[in-house]
Structures are given as structure tokens and as C-alpha cells.
Amino acid sequence: MKTKEWKEEVKINGVTYPADQLNRKQDAELLTKILVRRSNANSEKPNKSSYVINVNAEWGAGKTYFIKRWAKDLKYEHPVVYIDAWSNDFMDSPIITVLAEIQEQLLKTVNQSYLSKEKKKRFKNLGMSVLPKILAALVKRYGGFDIEELFVDENSDTDISSSTQSNKSLDLSAAMEAMTTQAFKEHSDYKKGVKELKGTIKELIKYSIEKPKGSLATARIYPAFIFIDELDRCRPTYAVEMLEAIKHIFDVEGLVIVVSTHTEELQHTIKALYGNNFNADNYLRRFFDTKFNLDVEVSANLLVANCDFTVLNNHYLEQKSVLLFPLLSPEDIKRQLSSLIAKISNWQNLTPRSAIQLTDRLLTCIELISDEKTVDVIVLSTLVCLYMFNKPEYDNMYSVLKENLFTVESKLDLYCKQLNLPHYLKEMVSSTRDYEGVKQLLILGGYERETFMYHNSNFADINLITYFRSFQCVLKRADNIKKTNYMNTFGYNGSGSVSGSQLLEAYMTFFGVNSFTANDYLNLIGLTSKFADS
Image 1 (tube, rainbow, N blue to C red):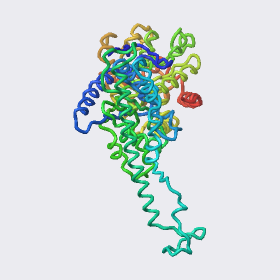
Image 2 (cartoon, rainbow, N blue to C red):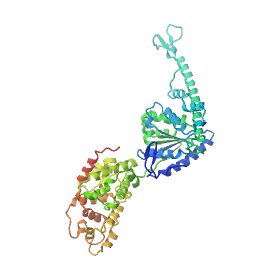
Image 3 (cartoon, helix red, strand yellow):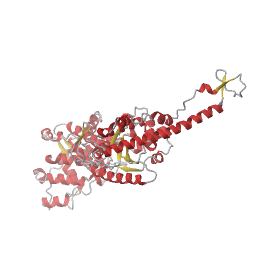
Image 4 (cartoon, rainbow, N blue to C red):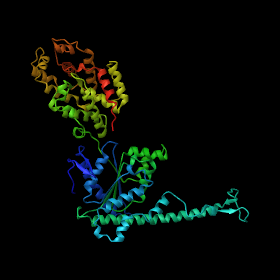
């Protein structure tokens, strides 16, 4: 397959897409292999048909990015059509949308010199001769007769019913006969029209494969791919009609149809049409041969590639005398902060889009921090995340901080090891080994400094809840610190090991975390909430 490396940015229809930061290329390669094999297997069956797959992920998980890059990779060797269903749902019929895109996108890939005038006209007018018959059947428009002819004169000898209109009454028998005749005719026309349409689509696909333009592979292969994106965002009637069209009209041998949706939202769309008790999951199974779930794992690289971290550059924080505790290494702060946000995002199951919004909001908070302040960025990141994506839990944490409570009642997994807070605290200790003040801080009776550091800097007992408790203790203690026997302030009695919490509180106090009060955090979050997220 002739493709551009996904680790590089790419331009598609004039729009530049960044390098892949979610390892989606391997998903595309896996799906291509499976779908080519299954489509070919379908062609061997007596009842030849298309193969339909639902690619499922939440809104903001990067489905459109994935679908567009995958489609671009396939275009060199396969006929490919991409359809943005949402941008077309103002149309009366999705059938018209799909036919128009097939005609426009596939005809461009055919070497026109191999087409006769008649063939070229047939492809350009794809479906126009049979579409009225198909649409008439689909919308059940019973036409072709004059309803007035079904009424008879009251003065005639014909038996009449008691219903009258303009001195005529309805002959129900004649009405039913006429409607039945018309229904049979329309059904027959529909079947003929669909058969003719499928034949034309198959022929166009064949020309795209066997007579391609020079810029494409000389040995193009089946199947053809149609990508239908954003169907879950469409109005209910349009979404359902699209699914029905996929099943009954575009069921063409040698064709793979990829429907990209947040499937749970698509189920809600269907229920809006058929009622909340309707089994939308079973309904969708009728249309899809299989479903593929895109994994969503936010990475630090994704955030760095999509967010503006310049507030951390050019010694901006250093000039303002702002410290982001516990990320105390200026040279490494971008890596550390992006890693922390990625872990918090995955802890809260955020989509990539939501994680990017969280990062942008947090960077705005950092930009607005007053001079000569130390802000605990673990606390700030957690609070901003909860404010944006889990407001009930934020309100709970708000009360804890506002009222200086020490009991955190939460449905969150505050003991979550996924955040790996000890890792950041170890890096903090490592990056501040040579601070003269820290050297004095860690002098304890009977301990050499290096021995103390080795035995007491693993912070194994630190999780989010113990971290917040230490943070509250430091804010409450303020500047009430013993200048001598510094560690005694934090509960160390001079014998035995120092706990991770005691050491954490000592570092928090030493670097001035208490210079930024609980109200300062809450006010900063409230201020930046005025910025709208796109």
C-alpha cells in the first residue's frame, strides 16, 4: 500500500492533519487486512453482498481523523468514497447524497479515454433514471390514480356506503383494488430500479479498478470502500433512512461500507424516532456485519502536538517567580506536565478532544497565576478536570477545600495508582538534591543526607487522597514552622522512618505551596471557566 507515514502531518482536501499520536495506523492496517479478506469471502457466497462495519468511538476520540487518514491510504489501491453524513443531512434523501458522492469521487479515478459517450453519460447520470421509482417506493407514495374516480354518484344504482363527499361516496373495494395494484407496480418498479442501480455502481467500481488514472496503482484491487462519517449526529429520520439504504440499495458485491459513529449516541437517535423502549441495539445489528471499537488512550505526545505550551518556555515562569509544585525542573517541565495531564485524562476516561480542552484550560490558568506564587499543579490539574468534566465531584472537593474539611467523601477512585504520583515526587526530590536549603531541611540526627534520601523518598503511600490531605495540612499550618528540627513540624519525632506524607508536607512548605490559598485556586478556576471550549 502506497501511504504517507502517519507520524508525519498530511494534507487532505486542503486541510492539514497533524501526525498520528494515538497509534491509529496499526488499527488501519489491521482493519484493511480483515475487511479485504471478508469482502472477498462474501463474493464467494451464493448470496453475494457488501460487507458493513461500524467503527465505534466516543465524540472527540478522533474518529474523523482516523477515517480520513485511513481513506487516504486506501485510495491508491482501492476505489474509495468518503461521505460526511452530518454535513449532508439537510438533504431530503441520503440515497441522493450517497449516489452523488459515488458518482463524483469514483468517476475522477477513471481514465476517461476508456469511456464511450454513452457510458460516460450513464455514469454522470448515476441513478437518475431509476431514482424516482426507488424513492416513490421507499416513502410509500401511492400515486397514479385520481381519488375522485373512486367515488360514485349517490343517485346511481350502485350500492353505496354512508360516507359522502360532494354528493359522492367512497367505493372502498375500488379504492383497495387501485391501491393494491399501485403498490404491486411500485414494488416491481423498485426492484427493477435497485437492480439497475446496483449494476451501474458495480460497473463504475470495475472501471475505477481496471481503468484507473495514471496517478493511481496500475493493479488496483477489490473491494471498494465507502466511508460514512458522523451518522450519529444526523437528524433521526435521515440516519435511519441511511441505514436502510445501506442494507437494501447499496448492498453491492465487492463493496465495503465503513460507518463511523459514537454508537451509543446513534442508539439515542434511533430511540428518538421509535420511542425509548425500542431495542436500538438489536435494530443496529441488522445493518452491521461487525463492530470495531477504537481504543482511546490519551498520551503526552498527543497533548504536546495539539496544545500551545509556550507559557512554559522562554523562562516565562522564572521571570514571574512562579513555581509549579512538584514539577521543579524548568528544563523538563513540559514533559512532566503533559505526562501528568495525560494520566489525569485517562483516569477520568476523557476523550482526546476533552483532554486537549483540559490542557488548554490548565495552561490558561498557569498564564494567569500572580507573580511570586507557588501553585500545586497536581491539585490545580485535578480541580480543573473535575470542574470541566465531573461537576458533582468538583462541588464536593470545593466544599472540602472551602470549609477546610479533612474527610473526602467521593465516588472517585482517589487511591488510583494510575496517576502514579510517587513518580512525580521522586523526580522532584531528584531535581532538588543540590538546593542548599533542601540539604539543611533533610539533616536529621543519626542520618547522613544521602542515606536519608535513599530510604525515604519513595513516597509509596501517596495517592490522590493522601496528597490532598497533605496539601490541606500545609495550607492550614501556614508559616507556623519550627526553624530548628524542621521535620518535627510535620510529625517526625526523630526516630524511625519518615513517612511519604511527612516528607511531602516538608517539601510543600519549603517551596511555599501555602503562598496560594484554597480560595486562590477556586477563584482561578472560576475565572478561566469564562473561556468557552470549542
